[in-house]
Image (cartoon, rainbow, N blue to C red):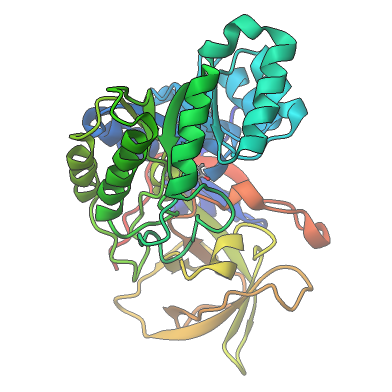
Length: 396
Ligand SMILES: Cc1ncc(COP(=O)(O)O)c(C=O)c1O
């Protein structure tokens, strides 16, 4: 079986040659290469990729080709997917709550790095190690995931509500895990699409406090500090600061740590590497509705629950771009492919007023948290992926 995918020069070339009836994920691997390179050059530690942001085989291959060898995984399926593409990959089981069977599976294939946020999870991991090979106890690294209720991260996602230990709990956990003989470290996540670069420095400082309190002047260091993901992409209206500002804050935060630093971006490596091409199934003139062949049960799940709207541009049915500069724009309500009344975008989208049934809409920055969570609801299959040599920039 070959995993080859069709390749097109541009989105326009795809429309002209295929006139696709179903939504198409237009993927450009060189963008991944470019984003990974920034971290390879500028991040002062290990860069992993959070593959949950886009588990498509071609995307995973692009991340591996870009040189990433560490992966944040959360399930057996993710573990198997990475190993199939990159057998030498180093996997980090960073889901704070894992099933005993998944821990066992991970341990047996050699994963030694885990995230925990409470003693009950530590006990589960200990049990697996004892049952398998107690002599390997000190080979396991446990990172304590902590949060700080007083520090603001992403406005879109609050990653403190489901997981994490308070700084006080983290002190206790860290000290106990160290006593048990584990390699220990700390981790946090500022929330996805975090627009505040300083959050990283502040959280790294909190990590320093936690480790000093846990080891109480014993001159011990944690083994690793994993600062998570959360690096933003320039969605319209988001005013995302440049990545250089984040890396600057991280370098400052790193000054007080002697341990290994690690990060695990998801969105930043892949969001801008793909557009989604959809076709207008119906323009309803009376009330300016556009019904398209994808929706919240497909690639638009994220904009249905957070205010992160992708940029959009239109093409005529024959592939001619409809320039936003030479046509009037008007707001359209966008409705998805299924029969469900929830299946629509909450914000209106400005598109050329000449757009009509059969025309196409390209949605940009659709490479993260899109393909990852599609369903087959109502019999509408997930978008298929093609490769695009060059995606046009989003300037108009
Ligand atoms: C533990 C962990 N690490 C990394 C990420 C990636 O975050 P982002 O895509 O915002 O970079 C996530 C996202 O949910 C996560 O849960």
